[in-house]
Image 1 (tube, rainbow, N blue to C red):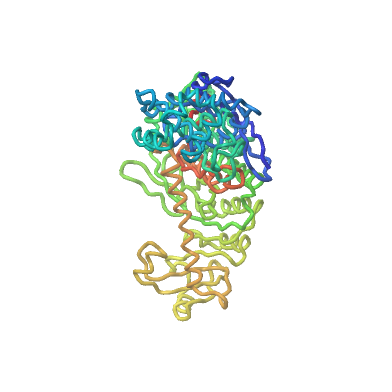
Image 2: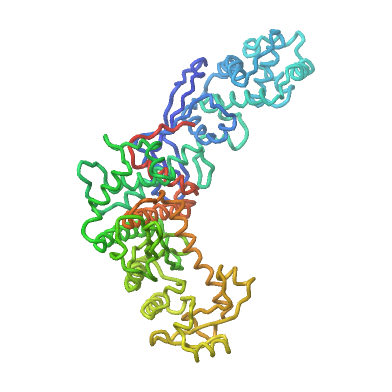
Length: 596
């Protein structure tokens, strides 16, 4: 099914004013897209009244390939039944010098040679084929022959035309490019639509799924799709603006995206000039908005506000991915891993209890706290970056995230590292994934009794007790070569606990699955380095807020990359900075007019 999307394309073709045919120099049409059975193609029909601008002549001849499908729709729009053939022939003759000039070529000064070269160019434009066919055409159409200044009875023959072709160099790339430009002009203006060969000249051809599209159309789709995602992302989130500030959470998100693209706050401020109404979002304004809305009361209350905002952003994106894109049609594998961020100011060490270890005090006065757990189904989406200041809060955080996921999808495998070896968390994994969960153990002497450990060494598997919970454990000795691939750190043994039955499972099977856990660490590294602005000299609360926004950036990137093609018509597959730029452009009013 072909659908008119409402995305307008406008062409500006100044040369057509010279044609003896009534053709508008500027025309606009609504583009057609072949979208199958899909009726919702919002990422390209939300265009704010903008349109795709095509300026002729295009600078690069290769651009004609990029816009051929758009031109085919102009050709259908302009086509006129029973147009006078002689008029077209004369029009071709009149504009041959114009298109040659665009390729820095001219007709010969000799009028006889110029007439013959024009005739040869005419023959290629009309796709008459051989020189013999060209001569026959002029014999049958004396008015066209006269318009080109040819005398069929005095010196015009196949041999003289062939000599003119060689003498002028008709096959030179520059001349052939001029002919190609000419054919495109006649085609898009509806003068030649039936005589041209090749699939690229099919009239009124809709833009199909998977088609390589002009960069500005792809970018326009990206901007509109980001707008759609942001609308869902920020829905129902209350975020009061600071005093004398005009920024909502959406503007803050867009400003952070700009800073992430630029790399640092200061560089972003110098280059961005992203204006909303009359104000510029600066680094100090960002801190003011966050502190006035979030950092109130004690550290614990403030972090709770951040957690709620992050959870709501996550819920909104999950809902969109589920309802609009059927993103969770297959079970999700989940990986868990903690990460650490530096804190230089904004909280005293005694106010922040250690989580998953003791707070590390640095010489410069900064210290580290744990920022939660990255929840990612094999790095497809992030399910939150939770600021945890006590290890006892970890089970509750995991339970909340699993509950979010279970609302939209079945859970496949759950993979986690040694920080998740508590009995309460193990029970959570048992409930969520039944058998398909794996946790790696380290420092087993603090966890596993000596007799159970000896049994593991002897048989490679055993039932062990962890805080009065019995679990199946699997063990093997590893050498230096294999440990790099499995653990990526120095160790001489590998111990996993899992719900998988011992009589049907081996340590080798679990070891082959366990490295997928590294996707969590890859994900959090992407959030820090690709989707977040530089976080130096920020308090822990501000850093955690930024990480939650970065998690949303990451999700938007993954949703577009994995779900737009082919279901919604555009194979965008953007890089992360393209998505961040799309978020900026979809939010701030001032956007450059696209051109091809």
